[in-house]
Amino acid sequence: MVLRSALLVALLAAVSVAFAQERVQVMTTTTDLRSLAEAVGGDRIVAVSLVPPGMDAEEYQPKPQDVLRLKQARLVVRVGLDFDLWVDRLLAQVGRPEISRGGAAYVDASLAIAVLELRGMSVGPGDGHAHGSGNPHYWLDPKNAETITANILETLARIDPANAAAYEANRQAFLTRLNTKLAEWEMRLSPLRTMPIVAYHNSWPYFARRFRLDFVGFIETKPGVPPSPSHLAGIVRDMRARGARIVVREPNEPERDVAFVASKAGAQVVTLAASVGALPRADDYISLFDANVEALTAAAATR
Ligand SMILES: [Zn+2]
Figure (cartoon, rainbow, N blue to C red):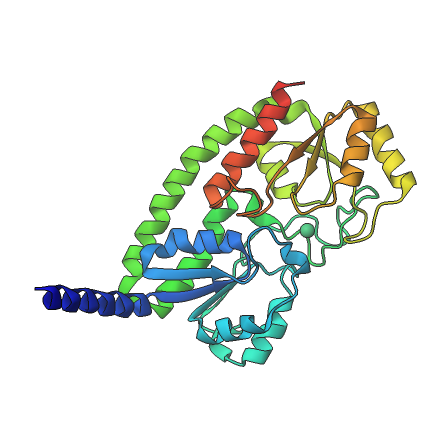
């Protein structure tokens, strides 16, 4: 009897290993794309983000094991728009045409996204960021998840046609849930439409456009370079003139200049997640917005 149950356990383990091997291995560059790939793939895929949660994906330094992980991937999903340029170097090392640019198992999630702040268009003096091909933080408009998941679905269904209908149904169920949440977020954020906001890094134009928020200035003038005292003084002056009372900081951004500006302008610091996993409660795509909406409405309520 003992022997038979041991055999049964071994058999079940073998079956679950076989099942796991059948799941499509998806590598994404970011946690946001991992979460959206999971929304489409469900339990038929295993999605892993190259950049770990809480790390700045724009500054990511690839690790040797990333090459091994990409060698095993059946599908690659990237942000594009010069956000994750480092993955091109990795893919060149891996040397598998199917998961490289133009390949049948390669997804540039920015395809068909309406890009904001294209170079030379709306980059004003206070708008300090080094974004190459327009602002790349497009996943922060929840409506863009429709396009991103459509891009993932098309390629996933092509490489795993047996499960195409399931992927399509997963995506529809996810978008239905997302659209219900979107209406809730829009309602909850509506009191903030008249409250000017300053942020450290310009991650927020898509978020701001969707929820009609007004980001009036950015503390960072260049990534990794501390802002000058005169830039900080200008931000404080501008915040006072406009009555801006909220300064947005992401958890991996330096605290000192944000705290300085907030105290001089009589504003409060609100910590927001620009990516899944940057805050403990933002552990998937929908809870990312839940956490940010909660933080912003809490700050607005205490004014
Ligand atoms: Zn950025």
